[in-house]
Length: 309
Image 1 (spheres, rainbow, N blue to C red):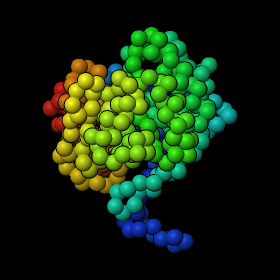
Image 2 (cartoon, helix red, strand yellow; image 1 turned 120 degrees about the vertical axis):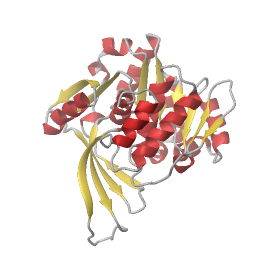
Image 3 (cartoon, rainbow, N blue to C red; image 1 turned 180 degrees about the vertical axis):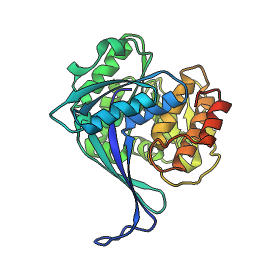
Image 4 (cartoon, helix red, strand yellow; image 1 turned 30 degrees about the horizontal axis):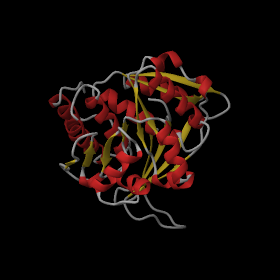
């Protein structure tokens, strides 16, 4: 994974926010960043994973290295004195839906010349979040990483990241940049797919996405409705949900991507990989934060699937 590592300041209220007023809730600090989250979930699901990113030469940067080490993710972290380690304010309302304000820290200052090219050339697969594409830097670094991996025979996957940021960047510009990566897998959620295609039905959105990204496997994340998978040359498959007890939606999409890749890269069919990933993301939304500490239920789910908890 190449991309963002950031610390999430999680703010969760039990009632609606009061404009200009006060309310009680829960406030906590948690590790995050879309690319780092996906890397951690791939590692938790049993796949050797490396993460390339940039952090500040500050306490949060040191904590980032400690966190990735504890998660058994090989970390290649560029350190800088010019920027603080990235941080994100995450508001979680009383319904479990989240809103985010992303600060531009060191994760937004990664340059192509800072990439570990030898490491990338050895990678079988590179996953990117579109949070590395919305601004430049780090866009040039993300595109260069994809080029290095593909020229060495590896493949690339992409999470479109945010429908609001796609609209801000400009739809045509985003499509041009993301297509240039040559993704083998795309992981949009329903809002991102609707923005990219102008469609609303899962099967139709997936078909249009397959046209936008020729040859790509489309793994459409549908939140409470599970997922929809369309692979080249095959009919689309709807993956139903198992449970829907939403506490916090933060990071569920990253968990889906990491879990899906952990199975698909080891030979599972797209349908089987998506079913496993739906189960992982459903566990995530029942907890606060993008990657809560594994509990007995998650360990049992991973053991049942043959993963190391």
